[in-house]
Length: 149
Image 1 (cartoon, rainbow, N blue to C red):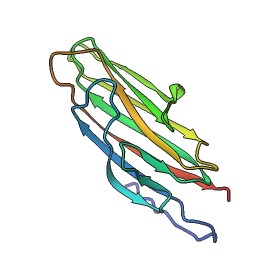
Image 2 (tube, helix red, strand yellow; image 1 turned 45 degrees about the horizontal axis):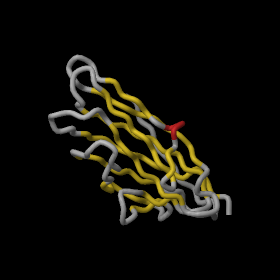
Image 3 (tube, helix red, strand yellow; image 1 turned 90 degrees about the vertical axis):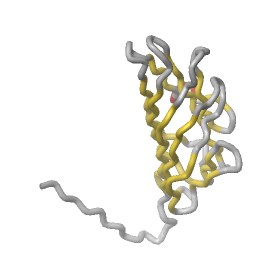
């Protein structure tokens, strides 16, 4: 049987932050995905009034995302993370579907965009036009990687 425990020791610095958001949407191509908070701990990662998450200054952030969708047989969808409304092409995913029409996209990355100023993180989805509704589900997990103040 595998068991593990996590111990937290105070170092006198700010508490590490982490958050997770879910996505369950019929979003049009080219739109930002709506993010619904599952949890937000530590106060450094916050839901914005827009479909974005605010990464508060003073830290590197680790971001991972996983999405599954049904764009149709032999079609595809793309996920494009945007930081401060600028496309982060290096962190994008392209997800081709198989003959059953199912595709998945995932990636993880570390960003330094919130070291001095808040950064706004969002995710844009695009796919070929289709006659049927495009449904996408998934999650985004974010964790601060340390404080530099």
